[in-house]
Structures are given as structure tokens and as C-alpha cells.
Length: 357
Image 1: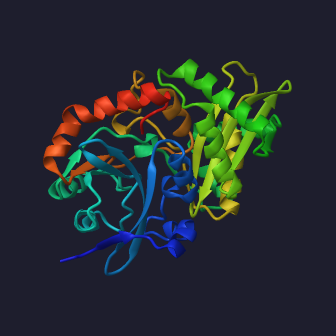
Image 2 (image 1 turned 30 degrees about the vertical axis):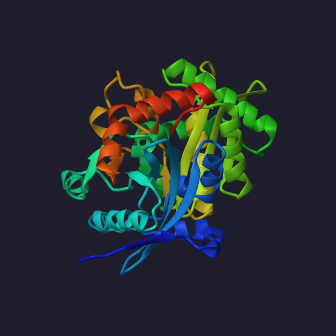
Image 3 (image 1 turned 120 degrees about the vertical axis):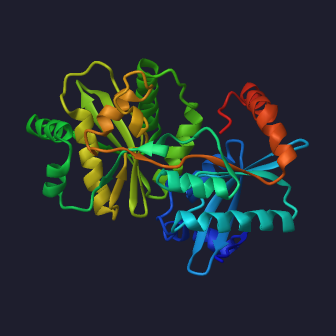
């Protein structure tokens, strides 16, 4: 039977965290990075760095931790565990169960969201390991992924015709994409574009500027994030923040003015970013969030417009298994699900004005 053991990462491993995470079986995820750990540590979470050691590989995973009166600690393996195969996950979860109990860490539940493509078989494995499906938390649990390994000409030909035509027209009309330094002015402008877009096209609410400022600063400071702007009449009209993390690149944040005249400007921003990410070694580009594949054409879905834009590059949507809970203490977890999570989320938001997760 396959076995894994769990332990805290050593100080030396934490010093090399991004190198180890990007060497995971699936190449890791930007939400497991040292930069993201620094952000969450400053926004309501404790951070733990865990190594899951198996017979063929070691998987390094960031754990976000919150502690609650009476209940104990909740562990959130954001975009993890990173496993070579879904069949490895039950052994990984058993290792976490054994480790937290032996170390008396007081963990009552573990929330996981491995980057495993959704299927009936994958869900059966997770359910068989004692996991319970819960609401998804990350926007790219359904997303458009693009293989960017081909050369530029071949890659352009492989894009969906809508995206290819928009890029070509923007190039013909000499739309100018500007790579921006991560200054305070750049970040303020980026945030204003994001908030304007969210206000116009969504019922959701953006996190505060301080959160994004630290997020962008952490990634840009490590050479892992870049800003791209398009200007119209001297005013920033389109903005994007794109992250390169190992072999994966991610269109993390974006925004635009709702009234502008340069056709294909937002498509060209992506095209320039894609080619920059290729030069940095990325082979896959994640557009970071679409409606689920089954609702891609549903105009009532809140991300319908974003889905249309993102699938103008990649023709299909990839659905991952999303978020699942492992109850380590059934009674405490029952209290958490019955009222605890809702109450603590409300209290945290009222006290801080920030999002719980």
C-alpha cells in the first residue's frame, strides 16, 4: 500500500521554498509560493510549510492556518496537496491526519483543493478518502488553460479565431502595450481599473488596495510578476498583472475602462504577456477563472463575459475538483459546518473589513 509521511519543512527548505514547490509533480501553484505566504501572513492567516514524503517524490505545500476558540485550528492547503496522481491523495491525507495528531497541533479540519481535473473517478477517490465536497474558493477551479510552448506564429494560428483576429487587428492598428514598473502610481492605476471593471460587470467586491499593493509588490519584487498597460489619449485604458511561477504563467488581475476605442487592446495585452512568459520559461498560461464548462454559454453566470474573453484564446475550459474538507475531529467539524464557519466569517469581516478567505 502506498504510504506518505508528513512533517514541517526545515529552515533550509523554506529558504528554497519556490524552487522546491515548482519542482512538485504538477509544478506547484502561485498560491503556494513564498510571495503569497507573505501576503496571507499579513492578512489574517498563520503560515505553515509542509513536506509530504512518499516513495517516489516529496511534495511541498503551503498551509494557511486560522485558530478558533473551542474548535481549534483549521488548515487550508491552498491549491494542494500537489500530487502526481489522484490515487496518491488518500495516502497524503492520512499522513496529515497522523502528523497533526502525533504533534498535538489541535487541527480539527483540513481544507484541500488539489489541481486534479474533475471527473467522476477523481471525486470517488476523494470521497473514499473521507473528504466532503464544499463550496469552491478560488476563481481558477474552472479556468482556460493555454499551451504556450509552440513558437509565436504557430501559437497565434492555434488561438480561437476571435482572439487571433483581435490580436492581428490591434497589431495592424499599432496599439501600444507598455510594460510598467511596479511603482505606487502603477499599482494605484491598476487598482482603479480593476475596481471600475468589477463595479460595472460583477456583483462581487474587490479586496482593499493594501491587499493588492502587498500582493503585487511581493511577486514583482521576486521577479515573478509584471504589469502591462495600454493607454488611450494619455489615460490608462487596459491593465493586467501577470505572474510567472515555474513553468506556469497566470493572468492574475486585470481591468479596463468601459468606454474605449482601440479594438483588440485587451487581447494584445495578453498576447504580449504570453510571449514574455514564454521567454521566462513558462509553457502553460492560466487565464485564471471562467464559468464551469457546463455553464460557459450561460449568460446569467456572473463570469460569463470573462469566460467569453478568456476562451477567445483557449477554446476549452478545464474544471478541477475544487475544494474539499477532511474532518479530523467530527464533532468540532459538525459545529463548524452548522454555524461556526458562518459566525467566524461574519465576525472577522465586521472587525477587519476584509475577506475571511
